[in-house]
Figure 1 (cartoon, rainbow, N blue to C red):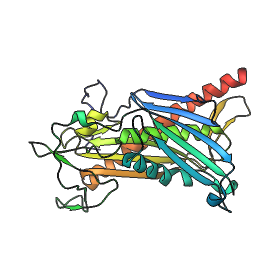
Figure 2: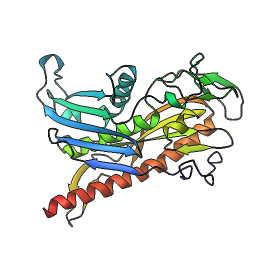
Figure 3: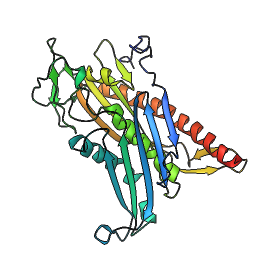
Figure 4: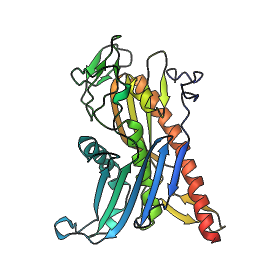
Length: 305
């Protein structure tokens, strides 16, 4: 991974591949079957999960549960950024839940953002050019082609000619926090079988000489030339249970991992994308390990009560 540059320190003192301190809390909400709070530093989200519930007749599905996902922003009412975040969640969780076990019922996931969707304070001006996203079709070629990747950003061009992150949707770090919070909520509910455990991380490329950055802050993301969001699903038939020897853990049938979500914005080539992909695997494994430790401690506490 030649594009990484791990020896450089960031403004907050972290190494390029270092994740911010994680906030992992479950069971905070009493009126939901399960809830989870997840945060990367100050970027955090709270999610609840309820179900299986009685479903309205017009939404009833005869072969599986109806999955309803909604989002509440920190301020104002949900608009385009909320709809985009819901679309992301809807692309991940149907395949991670065993919905076929609960026909003619409803499963609800509600995500509350605890971070703002706006990062306009990081911009030098408010002028934008035509939305464009690029990806290289040949790593050995310098020719770049335009490719539509959701959500299409509105690239800002500075005096130096470098594009920066758009202010059209939630930052990638906020999207990843929401995904991870929803995963915690489903785990805490315990009433819905999971086929895999989705974990997400954001990565950016500041420039060719500064390399890739894992878990960027909003300020770092707004000054990036390329932005990535990766979600990896771990294991099969995941559950929260107590082992026979008395230890608590998030158990799964094997350490399989599958790429379940990817979004990208900006200007990058295949080599840069591949490097970011490999970094995301390492980071998501680290997050999974911390989730396991937190939930193990919680279950052990319940056992002793």
